[in-house]
Length: 160
Image (tube, rainbow, N blue to C red):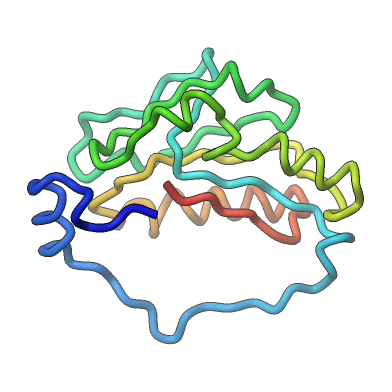
């Protein structure tokens, strides 16, 4: 586990002055069924994308609030990574995509009956969105509607 002292001075200053938002009350929905019966979707903020998709735009002020749909049958090793944070050491993630996009682990869980099924698509967002207004108001509701239309019962969020 990293600590603030592991970060560069620039990143420590950013973390100290960033205006974090608090949710009160914290939204919570009790699961409607046990995980072993649930359709589970993978959602990451690792900035992964298919080779045929445009990478996330690292030049957008405040961050790229778009998302990419990733088929659940993709070979994770073929995925590109466009995560922009210089505070994130990507070496482990680049060596094993399952560290930030654990698709193979979720496939194993579905095969063993630990989850009911894996959704046919995963969603990938960019991490390091410092101006999340568009994400909250526009992009996230579209993504949630896609997963609801797929009949997803639970989303496994992997924040990076």
